[in-house]
Amino acid sequence: MIDAHIHADTRPYEDFEKMVIAGVNTAIACAHDPLRMTTADVVLDHFHRLMNNDTKRAAANGLKLYLALGIHPRSISTDFERILDELPGILQEESVVAIGEIGLETTSEKEIDIFKMQLQLAEDLKERVVVHTPRNNKSEVTQTTKSIILENIDPSRVIIDHVDFNIVEELIDHDFMLGLTVQPQKMTPQDAINLLEEYGCKKFILDSDISSSPSDPLSVPKTVHRMRLNGFKEKDIQRVSQENAISFFNINP
Ligand SMILES: [Zn+2]
Image (cartoon, rainbow, N blue to C red; front, top):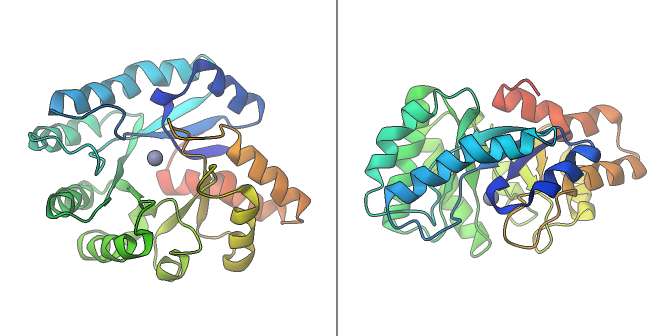
């Protein structure tokens, strides 16, 4: 299985072992806001840690980490241009497979500008993008997020994450890949199953978003287990728990 969205830097060594024992052998670790991101140096050191430290901690337990790096809407430093200058070089690294997680939190003008700049960079470089949707004002913010994406990048290279029943209708008829985050306070395995039963498995990828918030490193295996108990076809289980992630991120797990 693949867990398509985690925050490896917030989790203990032992979580990676648990994931692998439960059958998750690959994960995508996304950049986020683990500190007060006051300057570009803090953000770049966060990237450095994910690339050089967390990939090794995970690998020591048999978990292969790929990375999505970019400016999270809660990580906007005053000198963010320096990060945009560094990103094309960083994206050359073999482990870095997308710009992310990026997106909007409050839809402030600054967030929108930086989101657009990163989408345009991804479009120019033909890179993939992991887009966050927030907990607060989810529907409104997602509408704005969607229209900005459609104006700036080919939507087939975008995964919109933390999709739930509030926003799925808005997104399902577009070419986005859609992330289902199974996490306490967001979505239970059963909620994910209800959504997949209604909308099918073609466009969805499962993830845990394990972070400093309440999280479960076994979200993906638990959801897969529930899908089997609920009689989902093996082909559909494979799709949401690995194949869609392999083809979207173009990775070799
Ligand atoms: Zn996240």
